[in-house]
Length: 253
Image 1 (cartoon, rainbow, N blue to C red):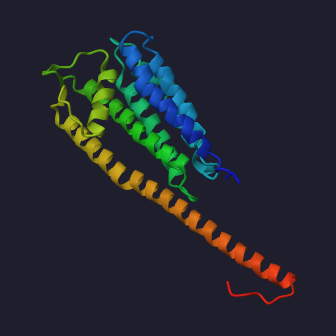
Image 2: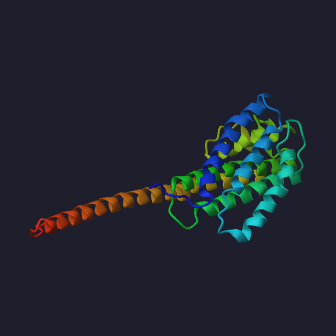
Image 3: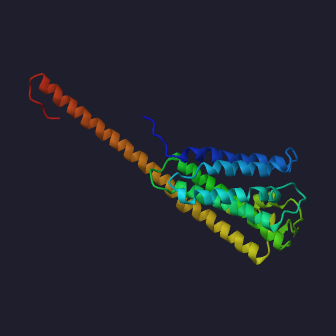
């Protein structure tokens, strides 16, 4: 019998798909000028709308606050993730990071909530990991807006325009501790953010995601053992009743 997922878990799969398409397809096409610059902002809105469906119905107290926070940053995110050469303001970058942060919090509430750990919840945890990269990209953009020479791009100060695309790449390189070295944080605030992201990225995988995977595997193993035990008990019970019908004494099983 197919298990019915709790409300909200079904939306974790399309959310993860939307994030992957945004990061791996939309963003490169924007950089290659094959898509208009505002496509990144539209893609981000799709991600946020998909995330709204991940809110658990039990969390009714924070639902309206979360939705209001996400929608309040929607218009400013178009400025923060607009065409290359633009000058997104500090408020725009902060609003984008805040909206994504609230979305990530809502998703993690769904992932670690009461109930069995499923593949959908693991997908939600992966989506949260990708959201971390987007959030820190906005934070790096915010630091750049406050201190224009906080980062060096190929040994030179970064340009004024098209920052988010570069910081999106730098964010995921830092999150995974790859470190190509093409973008280097030189300001103390930028370095602190990079250290924080690297630490969170490693702890997220080693603690949260690994724990969820181990719990899901344990649930599967327990389910197999229960099915086997029930099958043996059913077989014994059927054998005893068959012996009684035939008028004989039930033999040892």
